[in-house]
Length: 81
Image 1: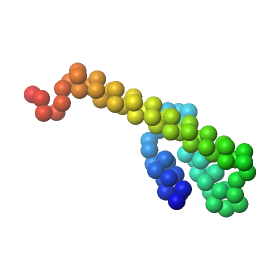
Image 2: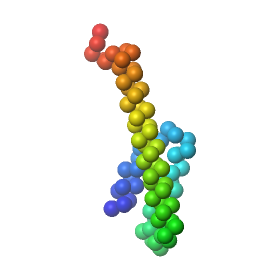
Image 3: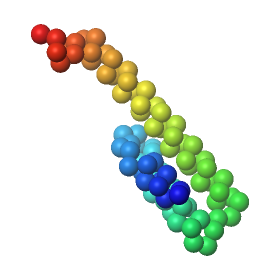
């Protein structure tokens, strides 16, 4: 089940340089969890990385919403002549 969750997290485009390596780090921890298992510290690390990634996604979503609103105000929509 969590591999599907990772695919959802990892498929999004990350424009933030800090976050570009997070999906790979999370995938390593997912794979370890499926195999040998994770220590308590590794579980905390995994959850912290996932939380950081979600924060980046939320920030990027807000950025694009604001940018889209600004473009619409400045240029109008495609149906406006």
